[in-house]
Amino acid sequence: MGRLRSRVEILTLVVLVILAVPSKVPAVRNDIGFPRSIMSCNTTVQGRYLISDSNGYVCSALSLDSFSRCCPTGGERFACQGCNLASKCCNSYEYCVSCCLDPSRTREDLVTKVKIAKPITAGTYASAFDYCVGRCRHNSASVVHENAYASNFHHCFSMHQNSSEPKESKTEARLTGIDVLVGRPGESCESVCRSRGQSCLSNMLSLLNRCDILQKYMRCKNGCYVSMGADQPAEVAEDAPSHLNPGACLYTQMEERLFCEGSHQHTRRLCPCA
Image 1 (tube, rainbow, N blue to C red):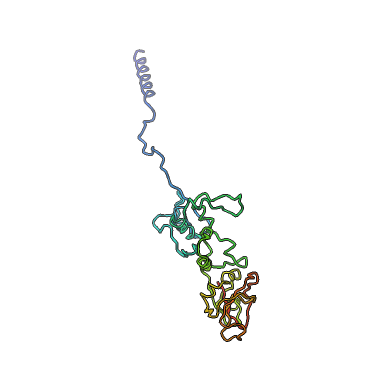
Image 2: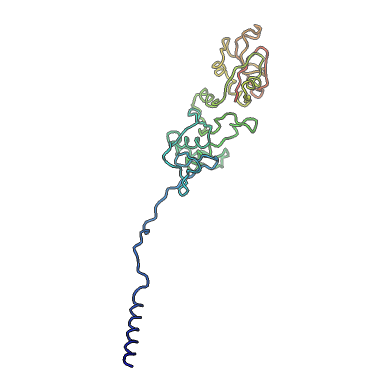
């Protein structure tokens, strides 16, 4: 009886010891620490193959970091591939955004004051990236015949032109990517452009309808005069009858009458083709 009591006491003591020892021994964890700060990017979503991020890099959609949504930083930053820096217009949306983000070309303190739309109640851009994304999308000024681009360089990020900028430089910038061609006597601009496999851009005729532009592409040796014909802007052929003032350049003040189809047997038209 005494032995049985001793065994019970021993078993009881063992149970108490086991209960006193924690069932799990705490281990040192290596994954405890301050959460890492992961920089994230905003990106364009328009292109099928290329993406531009808010850091100014362009990359393929497959190389975009899945966590940060940033492009790899190994490539060129603020790349302007396929861009005309004079007109600030590009033939690629993603490279337009990248080029636009260069602080030397776009000042964030200025563009964040630009209204998103014309109405006075319209808001302003929140950042340089928002401005570039919005500006680089094509607009109605870059479209002709409602469904065709006037030029391959139809992604532009320039702000409204400064009124102090020379008018000639503004015109040249708008003509970027457009072929300005001189036709033969009696030939319409429609025919001139078609012979080159291009289309005449009627909405660009007004840009050529100026003496300084005519004198750049034509001789205009007998001066430059206002006229009322449907063939303007043009130059009178040198073998034209004397009363037509051979060698003179002609422009019209009635720009609503500028058409690609107009022609005159004794004039050579100045034509915008693309």
